[in-house]
Amino acid sequence: MPEVLVRPSPGALRACMSRFATGVTVVTCNGDDGPHGATMNSFTSVSADPPLVLISVARKAHCHSLLIDRPFCVNILGAEQEPLARLFAGSRGAAEPRWAPDARVPRLANPLAWAECEPWRSYDGGDHTLVLGRVIDLGHRDGDALTYAWSRFGTAAEATNGIEHLI
Ligand SMILES: Cc1cc2nc3c(=O)[nH]c(=O)nc-3n(C[C@H](O)[C@H](O)[C@H](O)COP(=O)(O)O)c2cc1C
Image (tube, rainbow, N blue to C red; front, side, top):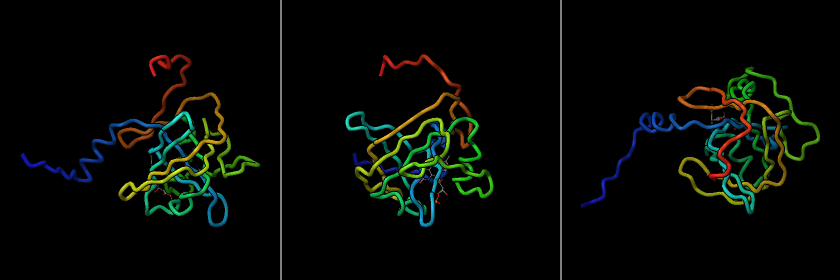
């Protein structure tokens, strides 16, 4: 039997993928004339040794040329930081960003967690580029997490006991 190639419509793809709940990050880096940030939910942890994380960056995004082969910071947002997610997704005036002082790579002030990365590898991802970064510094605080599912922002309450023993 010949292989049946299905080319999903953009709408069907969006409908499926919107059911996958994620956290929300703002990826920050040096811009043309100061810090730059872009909201991203394609973030995932990849490897513990070496410590690697992944983001998928749209080729058409301004940050694409700023991120490839350059250091960047992944800022994981807390529940109260939805305005920052909107701002760095292009909603002008949604928030006034505050930046961490003395950071080597531009970083937001007070994210729920952050991971500063140096470039590791990047790979073709169609109309995106898959960017792996090697984590060289990181931090976190207490608080509820900002989430994204069904094309909507939401929150996940902080929890102390999870299923770490299964992973
Ligand atoms: C919830 C959410 C998640 C997003 N995730 C990504 C992502 O993973 N990768 C990406 O390239 N753009 C993503 N975007 C779109 C960018 O945030 C948006 O295109 C932004 O304006 C890019 O900024 P820039 O062009 O100034 O660099 C996301 C937007 C939202 C609202």
